[in-house]
Length: 417
Image (cartoon, rainbow, N blue to C red; front, side, top):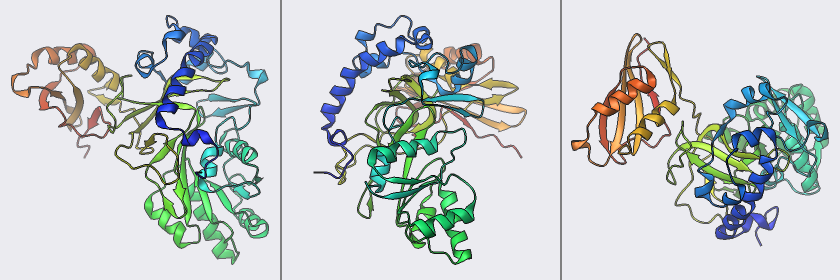
C-alpha cells in the first residue's frame, strides 16, 4: 500500500476521471444557486456539464475579475454559496480581494501536500506563514488538524524567537517561504543555536531554485518540497518524494479539474503545451468553475508511474504569468485580442504576436502557424489585426509546430535602450 494520506490519491486514473465528471453537474448546479455564478452561467443546463468537452464550453472567470465582481456585490462577488456570516474566516489580500474559509475539516485541502512532505501524526511543525489577514497559515493549521500533528504558530518575522523555538521545542518540519528558512538558519549559525531538528520543509509563495534546494541540503535540511496554492483555491498541486528521491513535477489535488488553455482564451491546449492554468474546484462554500489563475504551466507528459503511488496528473509547476498585456504606440494590446484574430481565421492553428523595434518605432508582427505557409494569404488577417487592436500589424506564416512552446501569446522583444 502506498504511503499516502488516503486511497483517493492512488485511484486508477480512469476511475478518478469518471468520478470527477460524475460530480461535475452537481457542482455547476450548486454554483448556479449563487447570484454571481447565476449571472455567469445564466443559460447553462447543469445536467449537461458532465464531460471535459462540455466544461470547455463554459465561460472562463479570471482571477483578475475578482476585484470588479466584489465591488459590484460584496464581499465575494456573489460567488459564495455559504453566507459570509456562516463562514469560519474572511481574509483580505491587497486590492483589496476578499477570500472565504468555510468550517469543514481541512477546508483548503492542505493535508495532502503536508503529508507528501513528511508531516505525520504526532509530529511537531513550525508554521512560519503569516497569520495576518491572509490564509496561508490557516491552510497549514487545517492540514495539521486532519493529519493529527502539533503546530508552533510562529508566523513571519522575529527571527531570534524563531531560532529559540526550534532550539527548545525541536520541531521536525518547517512550513513557510524558502527565503525565511534561509534567514532562520543563518541567524541560528550567528547565535550558535542548534536547529538541526528541522529535517524536512514544505515551501510555497516564492520561487525555489535548485541552487537554494542544494543550499538547504548542505545546511541540514535534505527534504524540501514545494506546494502550489492560492488564497482563492487552496492547494492546487504539490511535489512528492519517496525517501530521499523527489519525483518530477507536481501532482494535482484530488478535488480540482485542471485545464491548460491558451492565454487570452478558454481553449484547451494539447497535453504538454504551456498555457494558462484554469481550475474547476469542488468547494461547497466557494465553488469555482473554470477559474483562470493567471499562472502558466503545462501537463507533464511521458513520465513513468510515480514510486510514491500517487496516480493523478502531474504538472510542471508554476512557469510564470499568463497576462502578457503590452502597450504599443500608446494602445494596450491583450492576449484576448490575439485570440479574437485567430477566431476570425480558422486556418490559423496557433499565433504569437511579436512586438519589436525601438520605443516609438514599434513593429507588430503576428506569426501564424498554418497548414500551408506557402499559399496562405495575409491580407484579411492584417485587416482583422487593425480592426481588433486599432493598430497596424504585419503577418508572417510558419509551419504547424514551429512556434515555441512557452505559453507566450504576446512576445515583447523591443529594445528599450
